[in-house]
Image (tube, rainbow, N blue to C red):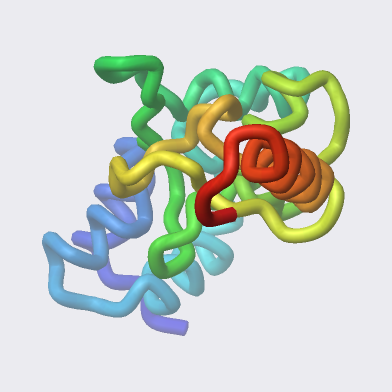
Length: 148
């Protein structure tokens, strides 16, 4: 393979693959292939030292926002925040939920706030929480009347 000098220079300087591709108008695959051809050490996603735990990785990719919200600063797969750690891809809301509630979510997670991209664990409900809320709503309606 013929190695482009400009790509090699940026790789040796530690520039991220995506930034090289954008700057030089080449595909990320071209950058990755060049990386391998140069026999450079495997890069660490995020550009820093690997995180010891999944929870540490989650905390490193969130920023606190107003009213208890948390803004995701990491990788997005479409609109879904994804955490890449130890070769595994985990949806960030599942980690946020576990950190906040102290247990793994049951079933599908649904965000309970209206802030786009919020990944605060308190702002997600799993099946168990939704069912408990439905029971509470029925009890409230039975006591006080009104729509469920």
